[in-house]
Length: 145
Ligand SMILES: CC(C)(COP(=O)(O)OP(=O)(O)OC[C@H]1O[C@@H](n2cnc3c(N)ncnc32)[C@H](O)[C@@H]1OP(=O)(O)O)[C@@H](O)C(=O)NCCC(=O)NCCS
Image 1 (cartoon, protein in one colour):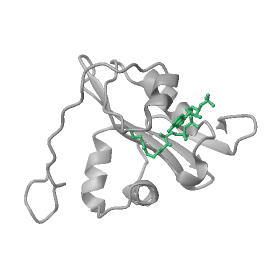
Image 2 (cartoon, rainbow, N blue to C red):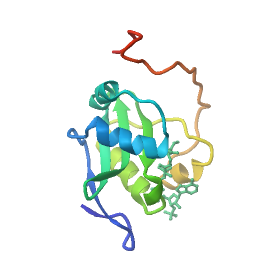
Image 3 (cartoon, protein in one colour):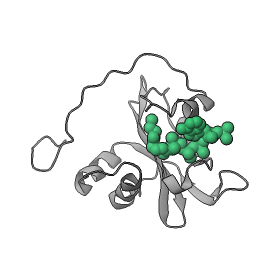
């Protein structure tokens, strides 16, 4: 529990939030990156990451997920803060807790425009990010893990 900033909203942070439910995560995702998500598959994905969450009362207003092998490498699949709560220090608080909880260093791609946020937290541009897109698995196409 704690405010991210003295003048900010009271936010409860949970590190390694194993109780995080796909419905809450997808409600937040729809506010940040609207899309077509399958709840059961999202739930499987959430079970595979270390999730740090930010709650305003019973509403999930921020989440960062960490994917790490525990030894060589860790990455951030995504960080998202509810648009209504951005620029109140919640993203910083989530990233700091994720860093503390992660046994490895972290490397990840950054969407254009967000560089200053990560640079303020001590992250530096390193290698170029390469990606190849594939549609998300669905329960219909047999590609689910
Ligand atoms: C990027 C994001 C996680 C930042 O979260 P946030 O809660 O708004 O960030 P904070 O309030 O903790 O910001 C920490 C510092 O970074 C700065 N900052 C945050 N986003 C910034 C941006 N896009 N450009 C410049 N500075 C930024 C803040 O002003 C603050 O600076 P200060 O400490 O000097 O006052 C949030 O904007 C978000 O969820 N965006 C949509 C999803 C997204 O793009 N995720 C990242 C994909 S790479």
